[in-house]
Amino acid sequence: LSYEKYVAHEIRRQEPMTDRQRDIFLSQCQELVSKNSVTEVVDEVHAIHMVQLTRFILEAYPRDEIEAMIMTENEWRLPTLLLSELIAYLNRRENAQTLPPARKPSSTSLVPEFNHILALKKRMAILRYVYGLSPTAIIGTAELDHLWSLCSRPSDREAIMSFLATASQSGMRPLVGGQVNGPTDDPLFVAFEKDTCRYIFENLFCSISVGWESLGDIAYDSFRSVYENIGKGKTCSLDALWRICLTAGIDSIALHAMNDLLAAYDSVVSNNPAGNAWSNSHRAVEETFSKRIFNEILAVNKGLLEGDATSERSAERCIRILKAAIDRCSSLGGSASAAAERMASLPPTSSLQDYLSRVPHGLRGQFSCKSVFIMVMDLRSQSNQGESSPRPSPGQSPTQRCERFKLNIHPLETLAAIRRKVAAHCNHDINFVKPTSLSGREVSNSNPGSSDMNRLNLNTVPETTLAVDMGIIDGCEMIVMLSNKPLSTPSLTTGPIMHHVTSSKLDLSMLFDSRGSSDGSSESSDQFFDTLISMLQSLPMRDDRVRDQLRSKDSAVNTHDLVWGLMLAMPTNAGMIERVRVASLRSKDGAAKCIADDAMVVDSDS
Image (cartoon, one colour):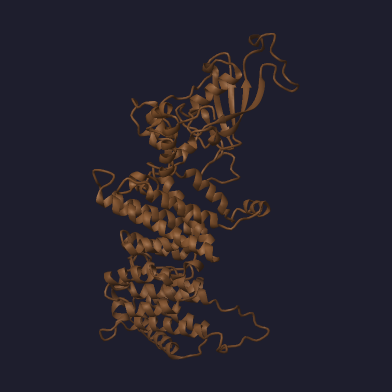
């Protein structure tokens, strides 16, 4: 490394002798690179070294002299030469299995196997550097199409996508082998014209033949980089995001694409403000998403019936997309967070019926309650407990008693309501009941092994905070203190903390609600529900042993668990509600009239 630094320092000297030597070295490198571009069998190690040496010498020139060195007779000779060398290398690699090696190492040498992927990435980085030295040095669409067709292997496709993404925007020079020779503050120009950049995104990145089943994070990061710059709002970008969601071989990439897809639909609605929810601009976007997810479910259902091996994965992705869209849709979401968001938007003067109308029927019974362990620490002095109080157990403080019991907590209950339940169970004054901590809760994006992340200090949590916002799930444990006097640091009573996902402005009521159809009928929602249920019924069944094996693997996906989560999040079929209401009116004329506005009333005893 010290020798390389010494040579780099010497070759950058601004002296007549050094200038002549640089020109000689660069001319010889170009001659060897040109020779390798037309030779079928070459020493690949020597070939990549010549390309790297060309850049090493080129970086020794002052920036204001480089453009003159890479242009010869009004032609970009050096950039074109390096591009031709790259194409020749890809052609040689395609025939590498049928050609003998140019140099066979002896049995005693320790020559490592040539790394074609690294060699390709180095060539791409050098090409990016050379074409970024001048704003007029550009690559055309014909050359890009040729490179794209040659880079058909997954590793090659990722390399070409990374190159196209970085070359589509100005920036710093790329690293080659982790080292940069020369100053790094010189920006590189875009290597394509604006129309070519659009061509790259629309015709290459959004094409059907990308092959997302075999691509990884590098490919999607490259796609997203170009998408953020020039792809937003384009129809082809939505098609590409749908394709990535349904066909990506890596679940994390499909999840990122799903979030970008829903954000793209939401962005279109946000950028077209309207006075009412059913304006033409909003409705066009909503119908586009609704029709697309409906058509995808139809295609998946057909594939499942025909035994297509990839249909189960596509079904799982459709379920995830639909559930995520429902959860983000504050007007329809069946989750506790979505219901809480709808309730929070109501004015303080709203009636109980107004609040009840915002709660889906799946959250209107004890089935949705979470079973939580309550550990009560009784801090009352022994003298104030009375003679009838039980004696403390061995090893327990004489002034402290503990009791542990289960308590059913609804996701929409507040911390104050939980205090009341504990006070009623312990027959104690609610003013002297204080929840102090909650452990075992659900925390998004936390480390499973981090106990600090899963523990919540309730001393600073407002009493208006909902159970769903505290992350209460089955098996949580809450510690509650009982005393005969007010405890220090009382819980706040204002400013509830909310941790809902940013609400989407996309209204999906046309899928689930008869109000979404043009004629107000429930035929549209009935058709969607029938198609969805048909797809879910077509999923292959697994016995209990296989399902247990899937649950034991973090990377495995249990589609049936996803289906159950979707069913809990979905709103009720509007057509079914209407039929139940009509049947109820016929059988109970008097009693049913009071619930005509809401057929799914809460049964407090169920």
